[in-house]
Length: 177
Ligand code: SME
Image (cartoon, rainbow, N blue to C red; front, side):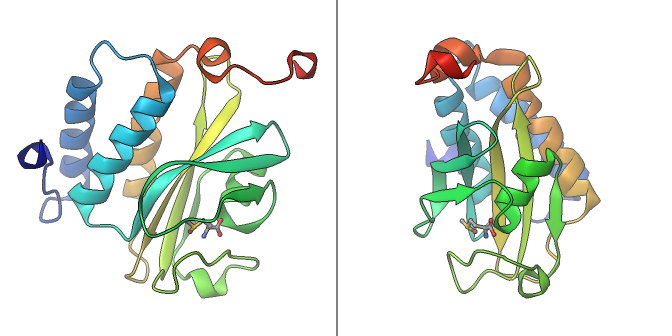
Protein backbone atom coordinates (compact mmCIF):
# COMPACT_ATOMS: atom_id res chain seq x y z
CA UNK A 1 0.00 0.00 0.00
CA UNK A 2 2.96 2.33 0.57
CA UNK A 3 3.05 3.35 -3.06
CA UNK A 4 -0.57 4.46 -2.74
CA UNK A 5 0.26 7.19 -0.24
CA UNK A 6 0.38 10.40 -2.26
CA UNK A 7 3.24 12.84 -1.83
CA UNK A 8 1.45 16.19 -1.59
CA UNK A 9 4.33 18.37 -0.48
CA UNK A 10 5.02 20.10 -3.77
CA UNK A 11 1.41 20.87 -4.65
CA UNK A 12 -0.52 24.08 -3.96
CA UNK A 13 -2.46 23.37 -0.76
CA UNK A 14 -5.91 23.51 -2.34
CA UNK A 15 -4.87 20.90 -4.94
CA UNK A 16 -3.25 18.80 -2.23
CA UNK A 17 -6.43 18.72 -0.14
CA UNK A 18 -8.56 17.97 -3.23
CA UNK A 19 -6.36 14.99 -4.07
CA UNK A 20 -6.24 13.78 -0.50
CA UNK A 21 -9.99 14.08 -0.14
CA UNK A 22 -10.55 12.07 -3.33
CA UNK A 23 -8.13 9.40 -2.17
CA UNK A 24 -9.68 9.21 1.30
CA UNK A 25 -13.12 8.85 -0.25
CA UNK A 26 -11.91 5.98 -2.42
CA UNK A 27 -10.07 4.19 0.39
CA UNK A 28 -13.00 4.54 2.79
CA UNK A 29 -15.64 3.50 0.26
CA UNK A 30 -18.21 1.34 2.03
CA UNK A 31 -16.78 2.02 5.51
CA UNK A 32 -18.81 3.63 8.30
CA UNK A 33 -16.40 3.11 11.18
CA UNK A 34 -14.99 6.30 12.71
CA UNK A 35 -11.88 4.64 14.14
CA UNK A 36 -11.00 3.12 10.75
CA UNK A 37 -11.51 6.56 9.20
CA UNK A 38 -9.35 8.28 11.84
CA UNK A 39 -6.54 5.80 11.24
CA UNK A 40 -6.79 6.15 7.47
CA UNK A 41 -6.94 9.95 7.47
CA UNK A 42 -4.04 10.16 9.92
CA UNK A 43 -1.85 8.02 7.66
CA UNK A 44 -2.79 9.85 4.46
CA UNK A 45 -2.30 13.32 5.97
CA UNK A 46 0.86 12.47 7.87
CA UNK A 47 2.76 10.86 5.02
CA UNK A 48 1.23 12.99 2.29
CA UNK A 49 2.36 16.25 3.86
CA UNK A 50 5.33 15.04 5.94
CA UNK A 51 3.96 16.40 9.22
CA UNK A 52 5.52 15.84 12.64
CA UNK A 53 2.39 14.44 14.34
CA UNK A 54 -1.04 13.78 12.91
CA UNK A 55 -3.95 12.27 14.76
CA UNK A 56 -7.20 12.40 16.62
CA UNK A 57 -8.24 12.99 20.20
CA UNK A 58 -11.67 11.47 20.83
CA UNK A 59 -14.35 12.88 23.11
CA UNK A 60 -14.73 10.24 25.82
CA UNK A 61 -16.62 12.44 28.29
CA UNK A 62 -18.63 15.07 26.44
CA UNK A 63 -17.68 18.56 27.54
CA UNK A 64 -14.90 17.26 29.79
CA UNK A 65 -12.32 14.84 28.43
CA UNK A 66 -10.46 13.94 25.23
CA UNK A 67 -8.48 10.71 24.87
CA UNK A 68 -5.96 9.93 22.18
CA UNK A 69 -7.19 8.02 19.14
CA UNK A 70 -5.48 6.80 15.98
CA UNK A 71 -2.37 8.80 15.16
CA UNK A 72 0.97 8.85 13.36
CA UNK A 73 4.13 10.26 14.92
CA UNK A 74 5.93 10.10 18.23
CA UNK A 75 4.16 9.25 21.48
CA UNK A 76 1.17 11.52 22.08
CA UNK A 77 -0.17 12.41 25.49
CA UNK A 78 -3.07 10.18 26.50
CA UNK A 79 -5.74 12.53 27.80
CA UNK A 80 -6.53 16.22 27.47
CA UNK A 81 -9.16 18.05 29.50
CA UNK A 82 -11.52 20.39 27.62
CA UNK A 83 -10.15 23.93 27.75
CA UNK A 84 -6.51 22.84 28.12
CA UNK A 85 -3.91 23.23 25.38
CA UNK A 86 -4.72 23.72 21.73
CA UNK A 87 -6.78 20.54 21.48
CA UNK A 88 -8.79 21.30 24.60
CA UNK A 89 -9.42 24.85 23.42
CA UNK A 90 -10.68 23.68 20.01
CA UNK A 91 -12.90 21.10 21.74
CA UNK A 92 -14.31 23.51 24.32
CA UNK A 93 -15.03 26.20 21.73
CA UNK A 94 -16.05 23.85 18.91
CA UNK A 95 -13.90 25.70 16.40
CA UNK A 96 -10.64 25.28 14.54
CA UNK A 97 -7.53 26.76 16.13
CA UNK A 98 -4.47 27.65 14.04
CA UNK A 99 -1.30 28.24 16.06
CA UNK A 100 1.64 29.69 14.08
CA UNK A 101 3.96 29.56 17.11
CA UNK A 102 3.17 26.97 19.77
CA UNK A 103 5.49 28.68 22.25
CA UNK A 104 3.26 31.74 22.17
CA UNK A 105 0.06 29.78 22.88
CA UNK A 106 -0.83 29.91 26.59
CA UNK A 107 -1.13 26.40 28.01
CA UNK A 108 0.20 24.62 24.93
CA UNK A 109 0.82 20.96 25.79
CA UNK A 110 4.19 19.78 24.49
CA UNK A 111 4.20 16.16 23.35
CA UNK A 112 7.19 16.50 21.03
CA UNK A 113 9.74 19.25 21.66
CA UNK A 114 10.29 19.64 17.91
CA UNK A 115 6.76 20.95 17.43
CA UNK A 116 6.76 24.57 16.20
CA UNK A 117 3.24 25.14 14.87
CA UNK A 118 -0.08 23.37 15.09
CA UNK A 119 -3.64 23.20 13.79
CA UNK A 120 -6.60 21.58 15.53
CA UNK A 121 -9.95 21.07 13.81
CA UNK A 122 -13.14 19.88 15.54
CA UNK A 123 -14.84 16.73 14.25
CA UNK A 124 -18.63 16.64 14.40
CA UNK A 125 -21.10 13.79 13.96
CA UNK A 126 -24.26 14.02 11.91
CA UNK A 127 -26.28 15.38 14.82
CA UNK A 128 -23.77 18.18 15.38
CA UNK A 129 -22.19 16.64 18.48
CA UNK A 130 -18.42 16.91 18.86
CA UNK A 131 -16.85 13.44 18.62
CA UNK A 132 -13.14 14.28 18.31
CA UNK A 133 -10.55 16.82 17.26
CA UNK A 134 -7.98 16.37 14.51
CA UNK A 135 -4.57 17.62 15.68
CA UNK A 136 -1.62 18.22 13.36
CA UNK A 137 1.83 19.41 14.45
CA UNK A 138 4.69 20.65 12.30
CA UNK A 139 8.34 21.20 13.06
CA UNK A 140 8.17 24.31 10.84
CA UNK A 141 6.89 27.62 12.26
CA UNK A 142 3.60 28.90 10.80
CA UNK A 143 3.12 25.78 8.68
CA UNK A 144 -0.68 26.07 8.74
CA UNK A 145 -2.99 28.74 7.40
CA UNK A 146 -6.58 29.27 6.37
CA UNK A 147 -6.21 26.95 3.38
CA UNK A 148 -5.29 24.13 5.74
CA UNK A 149 -8.22 24.98 7.99
CA UNK A 150 -10.67 24.88 5.06
CA UNK A 151 -9.13 21.71 3.61
CA UNK A 152 -9.13 19.87 6.93
CA UNK A 153 -12.62 21.01 7.92
CA UNK A 154 -13.88 19.62 4.59
CA UNK A 155 -12.01 16.39 5.13
CA UNK A 156 -13.51 15.74 8.58
CA UNK A 157 -17.00 16.34 7.20
CA UNK A 158 -16.64 12.66 6.30
CA UNK A 159 -17.60 11.82 9.89
CA UNK A 160 -20.90 13.72 9.81
CA UNK A 161 -21.72 12.14 6.46
CA UNK A 162 -20.75 8.54 7.16
CA UNK A 163 -20.69 7.51 10.79
CA UNK A 164 -23.42 6.35 13.08
CA UNK A 165 -21.96 7.72 16.28
CA UNK A 166 -24.28 6.15 18.79
CA UNK A 167 -23.62 2.61 17.56
CA UNK A 168 -19.95 2.97 16.65
CA UNK A 169 -18.89 4.92 19.69
CA UNK A 170 -21.19 3.17 22.11
CA UNK A 171 -21.52 5.85 24.76
CA UNK A 172 -20.35 4.03 27.87
CA UNK A 173 -22.97 5.47 30.16
CA UNK A 174 -26.46 5.73 28.62
CA UNK A 175 -27.59 7.98 31.48
CA UNK A 176 -25.37 10.72 30.06
CA UNK A 177 -27.47 11.16 26.92
N1 SME B 1 -0.06 20.15 21.52
C1 SME B 1 -1.36 19.65 21.83
C2 SME B 1 -1.30 18.34 22.59
C3 SME B 1 -1.31 17.13 21.74
S1 SME B 1 0.16 16.77 21.01
O1 SME B 1 0.68 17.89 20.24
C4 SME B 1 0.11 15.41 20.10
C5 SME B 1 -2.16 20.66 22.63
O2 SME B 1 -1.60 21.67 23.09
O3 SME B 1 -3.34 20.45 22.80
